[in-house]
Length: 248
Image 1 (cartoon, helix red, strand yellow):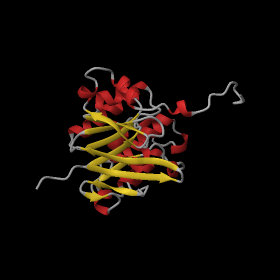
Image 2 (cartoon, helix red, strand yellow):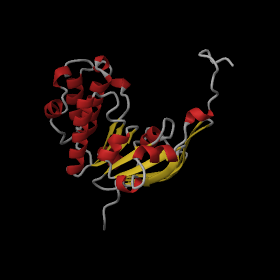
Image 3 (cartoon, helix red, strand yellow):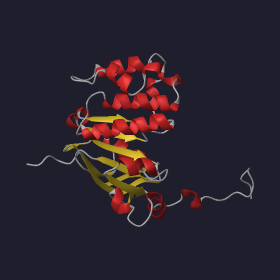
Image 4 (cartoon, helix red, strand yellow):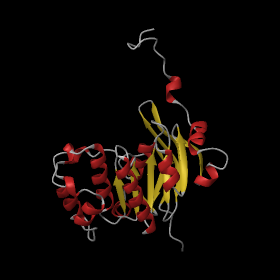
């Protein structure tokens, strides 16, 4: 019997009050691939990830993680999450955090190895809240993969990073794929998605607008042009003020 796909999302609906965050979202992430989810701000990317890691309970629809319901013990122990922010970690030193995280797993990656590989050594003794945005992202990535997950969710993994750190992080993500780890990432960076992704899903207003491989999507236009053609500009629906105060 074949192994289930790492991630199957079927007809997912999520609302927050009067706001529709996900509106029938359906997509699949394949085994051992990097799957990129692209979309404008407010498209539902982070909400989707929170549903996959049981941080948000959908109104309807299903999420299967490695063949198990999202949030089940079997799914949780085999997945890693790199969030956009980790406010609960503010007062712990970066190195201490990773040693603490390692203690939560039976067979973790050695924290000192990750500290070196991800360039954390220079700020390992600095508290998380005093790190730059890019440094925090490196720590977040280390925490997401320290438990040797089979599926890892990366929410804007290179946000705030300088070009050197960004390219180094891309190398790490590609190594995860080479090691057989399935990766699902969100990004606003077209060059990041074009380099890393085996399959891209472009999401707009809570549902899939178009999907395909990089080659398929860019056969006749750049990835950015495809993105712009299939997503809405939220600013179009805003009133345009005639003065900086917003008064007409």
